[in-house]
Image (cartoon, rainbow, N blue to C red; front, side, top):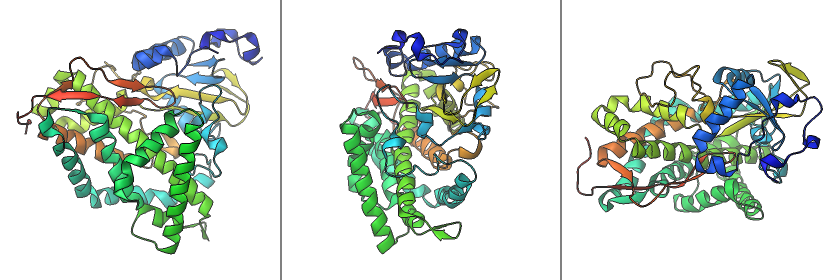
Length: 418
């Protein structure tokens, strides 16, 4: 079935026909022009008042930064109890419905969510990031030095996947040499078809189960040991809940940050003026990172309607889903002047790359640190880079946006900018 092949039977009786907007997050238009397609979709949504209904995906769809921020903050109306609001390709089950544990804390609402967030927040504090800063710098530098003299690389494989994998294995207490294997499992989990997807989930669960047992038997100074041996409301954490936390952090650590790294280097490779600007003035790099986060939101996120309600004049029923495109929301022209332009000196940047409200991303400090360090070192250690002539970057779309490959080239032997 294609997005255009829906019938009246696919339209709930309470949905006004004028709010119907069929589209396919896995379709050719988004695969070939993901940001343009999502921006055009958002404009159609805004033209219809900010909320439409997609009879193909059977989901409400929201547009505009302020409206989406309100959805994030109205956790009384919009629940997180299903992974990413259950936005899945037709015929594919929601991952959270086939796992033998809850993906904590993302699938929890208040007050349960607060108990687990109180446990996890200190593990991702700025102090923890400071303690691991030199390791992160050394990891980035070593990764870049491995390909700097070659004049070309696939930056997804050599940097965007490698750095998060090494940071992840260190934080979790897993063997660093298995990092590439873990990345492959995560890739199959997000983008593989069944039975590959199910097999990948089984491999991750197996590795995490062994890790939980080791952390109980022989706790170390790592994140999973802290989780497994913690208490929640005065009681030892259930091993199944520890598995759910580990599985969620596994996915986030090895996919979202890789995608953000990929997008920022794709942007710089395809926008030479922006690349030269941060080379000339490295103090602009933190602002450039925030702009990439705003413009290249990687997740098409969502929630579940918690109760029958009327929201912004639209009647919704309990159990229905509502989603939005983070990248399009970050390019809301009503909020961001010149929204399609990367401006590292933008003074007001209220993007939602890390969400908002109670479920704001726990790993935002780690992500910002990793994105900033990699951009600093990339421009310090390499001369101007570009997409390799005759080759193309290969993006992927769907629930999460990213790149499978970004071939870069530069003039080997030429010194970097600093």
